[in-house]
Image 1 (cartoon, rainbow, N blue to C red):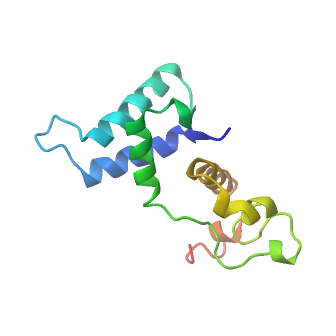
Image 2 (cartoon, helix red, strand yellow):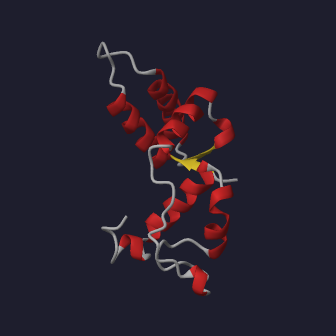
Amino acid sequence: MPQIHITDLEAAINHWRTSTPASDGARLAPELAALAEVYGRMVFARVDAIDEARLSHAALAAWLAWYQTTPDTPCIAICSTSQGDDVCKGCGRSFAEVQHWLGMSPVEKRAVWRRISGEGRALRFTRYAERA
């Protein structure tokens, strides 16, 4: 089962910190508090990923709201899987990932994004980074 990585939680926390800063300087927005609780437990337990099912409803809703602000697809319209490649030279996804992208959950999509970003070999991250 795909998991939400701690770096995605950090990105979501930073999104909420920017979009809904504490009004009185001390009280966190509900979305931020929910994500911070999960993040704190992960840091304490020294784990870098968590199952989606282990998030509270509020934390998952906050994470999904952040997810909606991210690019949906890594595609840069240079698809080599349509020409028989097992891995797309344009975005770095496998043929199966390209084929099933629309049916994937947000957590599954973020796992793919994390992998291809870490690999950084696709044209999206090299020669055509400005397109992305």
